[in-house]
Amino acid sequence: MEGGGGSGNKTSGGLAGFFGAGGAGYSHSDLAGVPLTGMNPLSPYLNVDPRYLVQDTDEFILPTGANKTRGRFELAFFTIGGCCMTGAAFGAMNGLRLGLKETQSMAWSKPRNVQILNMVTRQGALWANTLGSLALLYSAFGVIIEKTRGAEDDLNTVAAGTMTGMLYKCTGGLRGIARGGLAGLTLTSLYALYNNWEHMKGSLLQQSL
Image (cartoon, rainbow, N blue to C red; front, side, top):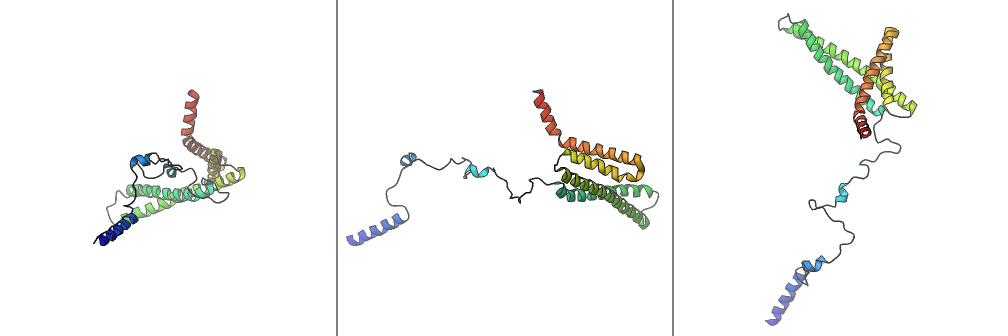
């Protein structure tokens, strides 16, 4: 009987040691003085090392020689497509307005609906073609100027806008060229001013201090 009890205690002791329940235990006071070398303190709110939450390097791997920002050639497709869709939407609304105005004396019937639909389609295509052509010229001039100067700044924007207006109105003679260039210069100058407004405001605040 005693032999059986001894063997049972050995078995239970072995299983307890295997699962970590046996052997000498360590209290919190014993572990408090053990230095944790090579370990940084963890955040009390997250069970992760805060170092992994800081992005010191680039998130994406860029090809050799590529810029971190998109150039004018990459933005040209977005500019042309956006201008075409904007022109189509504005032209459709304008065509709807004109169609309702021109057919206000007619009763609601199939001929009136067809006439309104034709006006919407015509005006949408006209404005989409106009804004798309302007965006194409502006993007082409911008890419050419950027490659020629080897720099990307607001001067390229103003020069591309001015040249776009001049070329678009070149069929109107010297007066049309001057008006188109002035319109392009004004619009692109306002756009450049809007983009640099925060920078200019910060510079003025620093100078006032």
